[in-house]
Length: 226
Image (cartoon, rainbow, N blue to C red; front, side, top):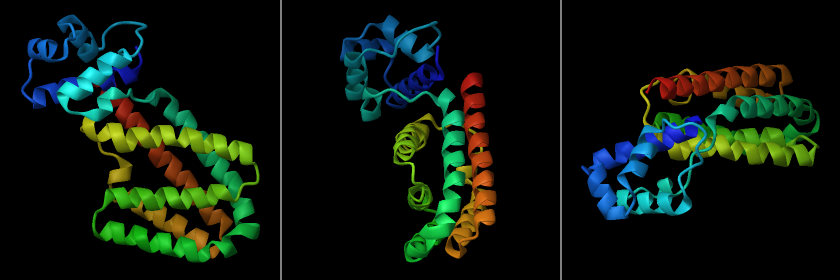
C-alpha cells in the first residue's frame, strides 16, 4: 500500500464528510459499492492498484472535487527527485556564473521584486511562482539538455503534489515553504544570483534542499500517523 492510496482515501473521506454525505448515500449517488468506498477511504489493503478510472471520475463528480479524477503522485520518490534536482542546479552554478548570469540580471531582478511583493502580500502562490522561475533560470545554464529535460519532468510531479493535492490533504504540520524560515533562503539565493557569487548560490541551494527534505519527511510522518 503506497502512501498515495492513503492520501487519496483521506481526501475522499474528508470531502464526503464536508458535504455531509454518508457512505451509503454516496453508494446510491455514484453507483459505487459501499465496500469499495470503505476500501478507498481506509486504504488498508496490501498491493492494490489505484481506484479505477471510472470510479475516480464518479467520486470527482458526486463529491464535487475534480482532482479526485486523478491520483496523487508517489511522495516516497520525492526526496530522491529533490536531491537530484538540487545536485543538478549546483552543477549549473559554474555555468551560470561563468557566462550566463550577466544576460539574466534584469530578469532575476524582476523576479526578486515579484517575490518580495508576494511576501508583503502573503501570496503563497506568487511566492511559489517566483521561486520556480528562479530555479528554472539557474538550471537553464546547464549545457546537458537531456538531463535538464528529465529534471524538469520530475519536478512537475512534486510541484503537482504541493500545489494541487496538499491543500486538500490539509495536514497539521509546520512546513518550511509556508513559514518565514524559508524566506531568507530565497532572498540569499536571489542576492547571490544577482551578484554572480557561486559560493553563496551553492550555500543557498543546499539550505533550500534541506528545508524541502524536512517538509517531505514531515508530510510522510503525518500520513503514517493519520
